[in-house]
Amino acid sequence: MSEEPSAAGGLSSIEQQSADTPVCDAPGRPLLRAVSLERRKVLYYKPRCKSWHCAACAVINQRLWTARIYQATSILIDAGAQISFTTLTTHEKLSAEASWRLFYPAWQRLYKRARRAAGAGEYVMIPEAHQSGRMHVHMLDTWNLRTRWWKDNARGCGLGYMAESEFAETPGGAAHYAAKYLTKAIVNEELRRVRKIRKSQGFLKGIPSPFREDWRIERLDSDTPLMLDARAYMQRGFDVLHVTHGEVFEQMERLPD
Image (cartoon, rainbow, N blue to C red; front, side):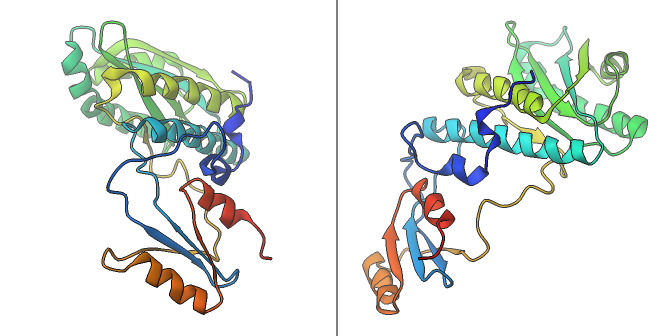
């Protein structure tokens, strides 16, 4: 699990178009206008839909979340936190359908116990379907609680008795762990109806935005003709480009001419 994932680079580089990066063609996406007064440049593009149900966006989502988890765990480890791999199961007497429906109410009870036992922690969790169809989750967390604690308390909150927790040695190991289960979540039809990622509010704290500060992004009004809008900027001396959702990040990364 110590292997460094290829998605550990910048978030904007993952969004950039390349030979192996799929292009989202979902209908109904708005036309956006990105303007940089400093660079005297305007970009028109349609953003990707970002849905896990979209074949193109699901792949990019998986890469982005792997990179985010790498960066988030790096920040947490640098701050002195210890990251654990934790697996939680649902109660063995539940049907497959009930396990999906009842997991998160039970998790909320277990979450409160974890906070009482080890303080305010951060986590990110990814669901997986067992061969039986019942739900279980894989989680990265900072509570530093042992397997025995999870077993006893998960059971007390209505989850399964089977639980496991071990420490992650590196951010790369944590990201590799997440990427493995996110890849499964993309192709598993059972997981199409559930959220692929759940996280604590502060898990991504400190990760910089992929957008540069000198860009202002606006939604172009549907009644505004693109050519008239672009011509107005060209008359003011702006360089105007119409790009894909992947190419826009490459344009934003370029230095001014």
